[in-house]
Picture 1: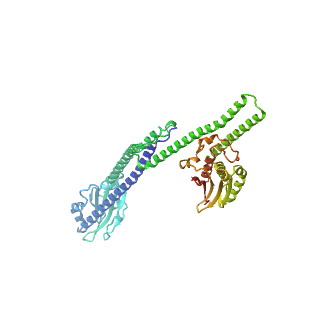
Picture 2 (picture 1 turned 90 degrees about the vertical axis):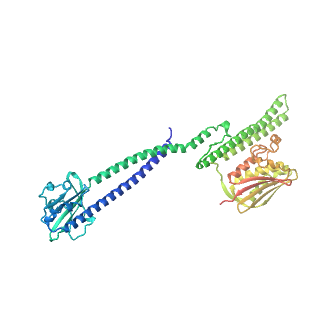
Picture 3 (picture 1 turned 90 degrees about the horizontal axis):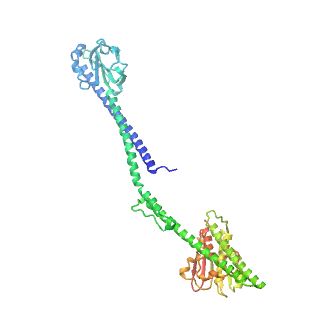
Length: 486
């Protein structure tokens, strides 16, 4: 099943984010405009009411109100939404302007209209200051929203007239509705445009990834040396490209090592098989004595033993490379274990006419069996290449960060160009040694299979340590470094 498009997912996320921003911004603008319009309208109504009351207070009587109606209504002229209604001291309408839509009562347009027909508003006393708190809201004719103020005015003769100043808010709500609709349309259009542009921009931004995928597709078994080369790769992807190229390099090196290992294994296994086959063919060429047949069987048995050790070593290396390889770590005295190993090899050392000396002591945390195998391989190798009468020294020493186990033997120095490669599988400084027979040292050693030092390095890597060789005219030294347990 094809996975979800990353570009589409990011475009949707970008669109959703843009929508959320538009909703927040649009809501803020709408509420801010509504608040500003309401504040301005409230101020207009309050100012008109104040002005109208001041004009009424300059009049002498109820008749003066009717005589100066134009003066009073001038307060609301020029604004069709504003309405005014003035009542004389008897509560009868004296003046009305544009009041038809402001009141929903049937007699709103009748001359008999009185104060009793007005909406239930708070009546502002003639001596009180008119403020926005005195504003009231009601529904006018046709359901129109109305806001206004009802106040008294003291005439010069002492009588009290009443004034109603109102504003029809329908145009304001219509303005806000249109503004909201435009915000909605702009928001939808903005989201669609943001998603489209976001998708195109994201696809363009992801083009280096497609180039990397295309370049990686060129890597095959026959072209492991191919590397991902993408021009002008973004800085965010430089680490990815470098990691992929490093991975390909490790894969190439591993494949090359595996190829060399397979070839070397086939070569080394062919040698004892050829020896066994050749000896058998010679023996079958003519009748042989019992002693000759016994010698042939002994030789074949020795070659089988060599093959068995080689297979065992290969299996150990394969198991050791598995992530779930189990190590039984414990703390022990490295000096005592070196002494035990030296005792085990005492007979072999005497046969080779070499001495084994143990020195030093240190506490090390490691797998005891693997420790013994690594030292045994090094000791068997040292016995093989130490000249008669020579000495091999096994030493253990400790430092602040590691425990070092050294196997030192006299003999011909190893050339510097071979010191690092001698730990490779099936690598030998002298190729002719591959045909040497096994010396039957021990089950733990690998004879001349060419895997002994490779096993030592693998064991040290399992412990997080290292092994290295030093060689000069005086001696050859193999140093095992075990890190201290934290």
